[in-house]
Image (cartoon, rainbow, N blue to C red; front, top):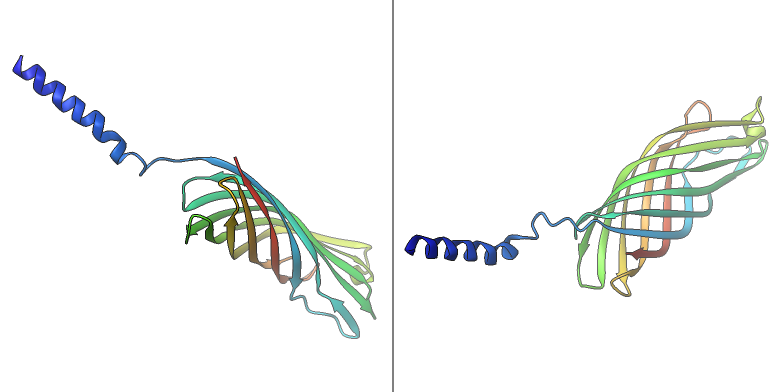
Length: 193
């Protein structure tokens, strides 16, 4: 009888202590979606006797899973607008594609958090016009790495305002579409379910 009481006491103690240790491997897997708009600027080299407008309106949509309070996985689509060439050579260079990022977050307060992103992106760079001569258009789809920093202000537990700066490295092909780093600055809204 004494052994049964001891076993019951140990089982009760283990059952009551479980919530205290839970949480370390507690994966939340909370889904989220978002949309942002802003400006993309390319550091493309402009040909001689040609002027380049290297900034344009850009936008992105994304969704993902918040793994825990410090890490999320994010997938999306980004359109980085056009670089426009005019002068001796005319045309445009458009960049868009899919993104896959790891997002690190650090909450400074319950409402304000810092964001760091990094990942790989499958981006298509396409040039059109006389800049693509002797063809009417030339395109290149390739993997480009990116890094970013940002911040998010949470209006509620489900809605946040996000602002980000991201740099996409070596987008395009040096021999065809031209290779350039692209800076993307966006602001938008994120919704967590």
